[in-house]
Length: 338
Image 1 (cartoon, helix red, strand yellow):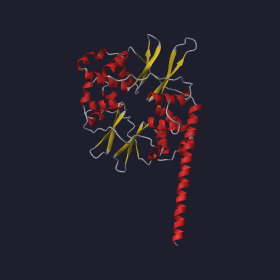
Image 2 (tube, one colour; image 1 turned 45 degrees about the vertical axis):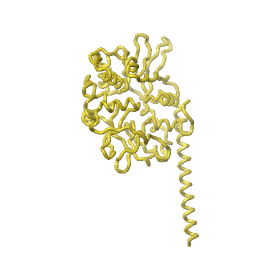
Image 3 (cartoon, rainbow, N blue to C red; image 1 turned 45 degrees about the horizontal axis):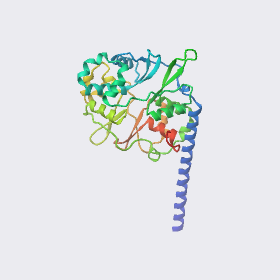
Image 4 (spheres, rainbow, N blue to C red; image 1 turned 30 degrees about the vertical axis):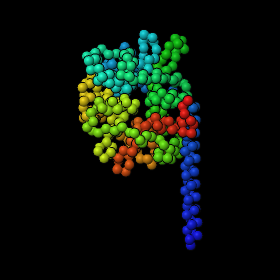
C-alpha cells in the first residue's frame, strides 16, 4: 500500500514538472514571436489611420504651452525650432515639474514666469542640477524593435517619429509613439501573447523594493520632489496600513497648474485628486501571481499605463510599469541594451 502511495506521489510530481516545462517553453515561444513581430513591423505601422499632432514652437511661452496641452487633452508635444527649422525635442510633464522645482528653489524668479519660454527649459535644468533629457527620435520606417530599444536605452516613455523631406531635406515630425500604443499594437496583433502564462513573481517583472509612497495628507510639492529625485512618473497613495487608495501621477500636476496656479502645490494629495479630470482611467492593480497574458488582455481593452501590485488585502507589494514589460519582452535572455 505504501509503495502504491509513493508511486502515485512520484507520478504527480512528474506531471507537475511536465506542466512547468510546457509553460516555460510556451513563454519562450511567445517572446520569440513578439520580437520577430517587432522586427518586421515599422513604427509607422502602429499609427492609426487618422490622428492629430500638436507641435509647439520653442519660442512659445511656457504658460501658453501648458494651456494648449490641457485644451487638447494631451500630455506631451514635439518641439520645433523655427529659427533652425529643426526638431528640438519633446515637451513632457517632466519639463513642467522642472519649472516648478526652479521656482520653488528661486522664488524671486516667480515674477518672470509669464515671460518664460520653452527655449529656456535647458537653462532651468542646469539651474536645478537636472540632466537634460536625451533628444531621441527615430525614422517612422525603421523597425519597431529599434524604436523600442531606443526608448529603453534613453528611459523615454515615448519617442517622436521624424522623417526628412526628399526635396527640401528638412526634418518633419510625423507623430509621437508611446509605450502604451506599442504594447496595445502587440496585444492586438500577436496571438502568442496568450502564451505568456508565467506569474510575475517568477519572471521578475516590476519593482518590489524601495517604492516611494505618499498619503492623502502629503503636500503635492513633496510628491513632486519625490518624482524628480527618483526619476519616476507616479507615486502610490496608501493609508497607514499600506492599503492602496490611489496613485498620483506626473500628469496630474498639469491639471493643477494649468491656470498658472503654482500656489496650489501646497495642497494635500487628497485635495489635489479632487481636481483630476473625469476621464481618469482609474488605478489598475494586479497580484504577484498574475501573468502577462492577462495584463495584455487589460492593455487590449483600455488605457493601462502601470499596474500596482497588491496582496489579498489590497496592500502595496510593488509596481509594474510599461517600461518593465517592454524591457522583459525585448531583453529577457538577450543581455543588456548595448
